[in-house]
Image 1 (cartoon, helix red, strand yellow):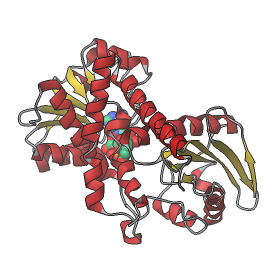
Image 2 (cartoon, helix red, strand yellow; image 1 turned 45 degrees about the horizontal axis):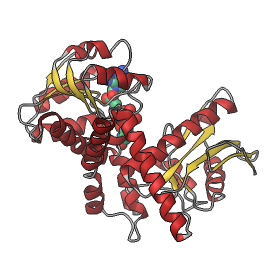
Image 3 (tube, protein in one colour; image 1 turned 120 degrees about the vertical axis):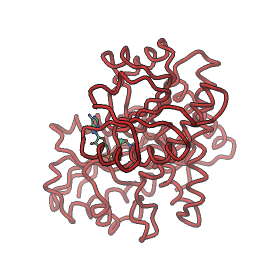
Length: 359
Ligand code: NAD
């Protein structure tokens, strides 16, 4: 196995691993560990080149730094990628990946991401302890989706408070795009709070089944942006907020769990100009990472602690809205500012105590 460091400005450590025996070609990027060890998932994709993989892992690991900083998980940001067709996966490849993770001495902790399942992580776990998000039976935090949905509901509370000065879902209309693992659960939670729900999904069978079971209103996916509502919750895919869609929106606020909802960051300004309150995706969808972070507590994972911490998404989002208002900036920029503030405060505290991150 050959591990080579790649110097990248602004990143603590980036390294490539080539293991001829197992066919592993991977990169781990640790962006920042000021707040704690860098946690971020492992994905496997048939990248066209190592440069393309490097671009992806750098972008994602920096994103994890901000997500964890704003969620206040006590974690830093990192990510890893395996370059290759997921069809070529093997236990030997994941054992080599575990050794690669271990070579970071605890500064990087891995988890699931695209094309990597729990069974793959169980193999990684054979050569490193630095793995999270395994099954509940194995003492780990398990499936993050229910916690992501609960976190989104807490975020919507902050949205309602910002819009109306009080939190009351009765009669509020929420349109949810994508009723999969998170969106489906979110709809149930909102219904229990008294909200009126309209759902859409490219999976029309699932829409019909959920509408029948729970009494939700439905709309064809292509028409959902035209439905007037209080909150629009994108829970399907990224880049949905763009030049074509923003002028069509008839919502007062956006709060959903899909990653990278803004096609470009300038679209946050377009939403602001239209008077639509945008809850930055990585702030409102942090329930899953918060749930995983509870595994790091001295006693290990426990659900009550996870639920308590997931509820702080409400406070984090309120802070983001306050910064946006006082500094007259977009909520997207306000979230970045909050993350920067938390990292700067931790750097100062480390400097005062002469410490660095504990791994
Ligand atoms: P999922 O695959 O279970 O559900 C996604 C749903 O969206 C499916 O029902 C799918 O049919 C539908 N969909 C896909 N493309 C669509 C389109 N173009 N138009 C309408 N519907 C479409 O995924 P999930 O776990 O519920 O996650 C949803 C989103 O939230 C993803 O973007 C994911 O990256 C993000 N996210 C999930 C978690 C988590 O804990 N699962 C955490 C953070 C972010």
